[in-house]
Image 1: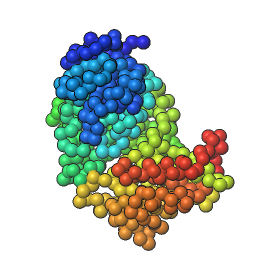
Image 2: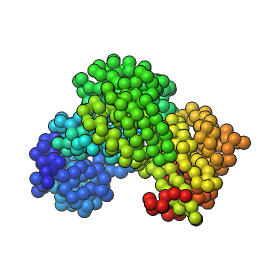
Image 3: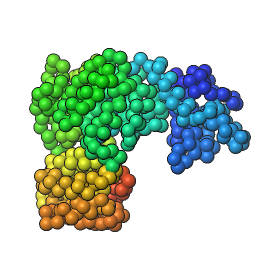
Image 4: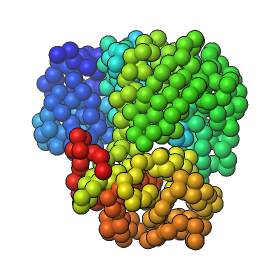
Length: 477
């Protein structure tokens, strides 16, 4: 097996000092002692809550071949009998290793940011490009100051494509990350009121997202949402940053990667898109208008990196949403089944509206109801009450029958929903769970969504624990 890093290149890249009987090569990179594997280099990063140096013994027990530790911590690690690479700063060493991985790579690199849909778009790109060639991408939402260099450091030297997600909560956070990634193609999915509590306006959010252009390679590309109200702002920012080629996607007739026709269904979407000089017919294995928008950006990026569009379109047919990001389950309740849509990972006004619309397309069984289980959208600051209240109209438009709410911010929606839609409110997630599990019936479609900090994963877990999954061959009502 070819190592991910030879010992020589690893030490040179990290500016490290070897201590002990070193292995000839390193097969993986880890920052979590619980998941460190055989042959990994474990970077003992000091985080906000934990210091990796406290877990080096566990990393060794799980098979880590090398420990990357700070010089100042070395005296306290004298009892550890394992090879070490000693550095001044562990996180900086990881960043340097990531930069070295990018420097040696000949892969076409795509970077994704945006207020909504970046993780799904990243996952869709990884899934589709893997049908064309070896593709490396971030796992989960590894999109911050440690996730991006970790993903880079794990990138094999011989992969054909690399896909990176870049996130931010404040201005200035994207710039250092994208300058490490140096993408050939940069995608901004959309601009919406996410993290609005940390910004004065959508224009400020757009400016922060536009930092992604600062790392685009010479003769590189930007892909922007032509249907978003901040398209012009982003286009101007891309020009100012010197991006050579600027493209757009969307339903607008002016979009370069254009939606021509679409049919939205409960479990999939079928569309025709104009990509370059050809019409591409696509079936997406995950439903939702927002997923269609993401797929246009994916098709555009694939076209720009020279991928076979027929293979990309074929791969979209079996793309499935991830846990917490639209994954669907058919569960058995008595003599019938119901549908659970898991959107519990995160929420902001745009993604909440998209999830509610998705519930509106869900197929119901006899006497079935559309049930929305909604928790707080966080980081909206002074805009929070108004943005929660404004969910009334999307709920009415989607013909939602019942709404269950939890969290202090959702109190505003409860007040606004009075006499509009049957609603139950509880202050905490824990007190809402038994209401939901008791209320659901055969034929229903139930969607669970909130910001991660509200812990609505517990609602999903309770439903999955109480109701057995329906075998795929027996998924009808």
